[in-house]
Structure formats: C-alpha cells, structure tokens
Length: 461
Image 1 (cartoon, rainbow, N blue to C red):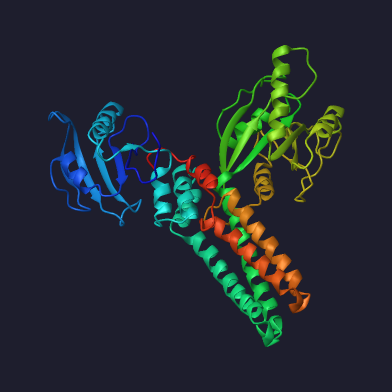
Image 2 (image 1 turned 45 degrees about the horizontal axis):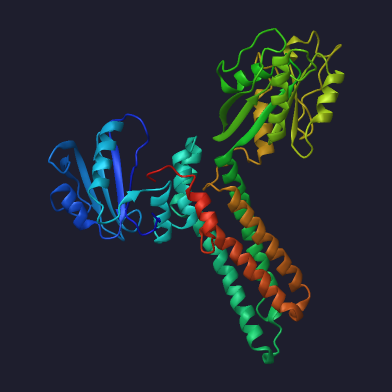
C-alpha cells in the first residue's frame, strides 16, 4: 500500500523498555472527530483530560492523560493527539494496536523514523537546521552539547544563516538591477561599494564557520586510536583518561587482543578512545587477528596517539610503526612511563615536554603526570578552543555548505577585481553562495537528503 505524507501517523514516542509513563503520539489532518470518538468524549484543545483508554468492547486497556493540539499550533503543524499512560511495553502495544484497529476509515498507519519532525519541517514549524537539532538534543552526550543543541532548536544557528543570506540577497538585487539596465552606464562596484560589502559578508561568514566547526566538534567528537607496541601503557592510558578500569592491565605483553572503546568528555567535547592490541610480529594466531584489527582501526582514526616507552626512545620497531601509519591523519606522539626513568637527566631520558604541535607529550599513565597536557593537545587537534563553547551545534553538512558558500564568495571577489565587465559572473557566484547557505535551513533541499536526515531519528519523534 503506497505511503503518503498526508496519512495520519501513530507511534510510541517514549523509549523502548519499562518506565513510569509511556506516550503514544498521533498526527494528521482533521483528527478531532476521530479522537473524540476514540476516547468517548469531546476533548478541549490543549487541556489534559484524565480518562480510561478503552477498547471497542469497553475493556479498559489503561488510564492516563489525553491531550489534543489542533493544527497548525502543534508540533507537526497538523492535529496532534497524545495519550500518556503507563510505560509498560505490553500496555503501550495494546493501546497502539487498538488505535490502529479503530482507524481504517482515516488510514492511520505507523510512523516512519523521524516522521513527526519531518512533518514539522514540511509544514513550516521548524527549518531543517532546527529539525536536526531535535535529534541532536536527544542524542547529546554532555551538558555542553545539550545547551548548544537547544540553542540550535531555538533558532540561533538559523538566525545567523538567515542574516548572511539576506545580505547576499541585497547585493544580488543590486547586481541584477544593474544587469537589467546596462544603458545606465554606471560603475556598479564603485557606486554601491560592492567589493566592500562583499568583504564584510565574507568576514561575517568566517565567524559563523569558526563557530560551526566548534559546534561540529561538540556534536561529533573525535575518534582517537591508541597505537603502539605491546606493554607501552595503552590500556593504562585509557583507564587514566576514563577514570575507571575499563581495560585489563597486566605486566604481560600482548594482554589486549581486541579493541576496547570508551567515550570520555574533555570540556564537554566527546572523545571516542579506542585501545588496540600491541603492534608487533607474532606467531600467536589469536594475537595476529587482534593486530590486524588494530591496523584496521588505525585506518579509520581521526587522530592517532602513538605511545612509546620513554625508556626506549630509539626503538626501531616504533620507527616501523610510524612508517606504516596512514598519511594525512594527525599523529600525536606520547612518551609514557617517565616515572620509571632512573634519571631524567641521565641515560634513557625522554624528550622534554614542549607545547609545540609536533612535540611529543611526556606522561605517566600511572601517576597522571602530563595528562592535562595530553588532553589539551587532543582538543587542539580537534579544533576546539579551550574555554569556548559553541552557542549552537553543527553537523558536517552544515560546515561543508558554509565552506562552499565561502568558496563562491571568494570567486565573486575575484571577479569584482576585474570591474563591471564580469558582473554576470559576479552575480552567478553570489547566487551559488546563497543556495549553499539555503541548503542549511532547507530552502533548497533534495528529497534524498531529507530521507537521509530523518531516517536517523528515533521512531515517535
């Protein structure tokens, strides 16, 4: 049976499992008559009604609150009915199935993932950046991420994009008017200070892009892989960063045979730390599989933390590991076990700690020495400014769209340098920059992109 975006939809809106309260949500056009018949009484808009949820034969399935929100003043912009009952899976399924059984005449169907929020977008209740912020708020893994997601949902990010778009549109209008009346013979760029106005827009866009990159880091975090020879302290470092014994640590080389993943937060930024099997040649079949998985994990890393034993700074096996590391991935060199050096000034001394980006970080996973420096360097590699907090979250596609707009504006500035002879090219780049910005809020958005975005939402949202 074909699915239509105008079909009434229903879903359990609360998370799977047992809870004190469970919510069933229904959305669709003209639901008031159906809702009143379903519940056996007339519902007052936006008022909570305590009543029994009865099956067709009168059996009481549950009892709780019913709330009716007439469109367009609802979450989806359509009529919305919410039934708030007890949170047991069995009772929620019974109420859901009863609603479906008694709605053949209106075509009620189960909602797809994210379909309620998708309808809010299609009906103009939210723009696309705000709709994405709904999912980001639900998935936020830190208080900082939750605050920023709420700011995006409230429209802070969209307001920045709309302001940039408006300034580009005004400049486009002047260019288009000049192209429509070429007989006026005015120097457009000079008369309207187009180059200066364009530069001001570009400066503003750079600020938004910087904040968006911060927001992307806060949302997505960083995939960090700990790599190195066996027994250099990778598992000890993971435990120290996590503040818990999440990985087994023994003096026996090769203890870790498979990856161990732990999420930590540094200044609210999520870091996905992966401990891997020690890299070496081995005849042990099980350990060899673990090492192969280590290299596969290293290939997917956004940052590689290469651990070395501070007592053996010139080990040739470490040089071989460095040679095999993927090109283009940031590598943070870490010298561990400095607490075991016989003399910091004598034989076997590790490199001195330095703050340069290419300098090794000197630590002791056992005592905690140098860990604050390591955390700061990881944030720096992620592009996070210490002490900063993005006022809104951003996604990879938002950053890409802003970078595309910046590229187009730079091309427009290049055309402006050649005077009014290339005003048509100047105007075209402004148009493309405007379209790139509009992709963020969804004014120009393909159905494929919408399907990809909303399919990642939970059912019932």
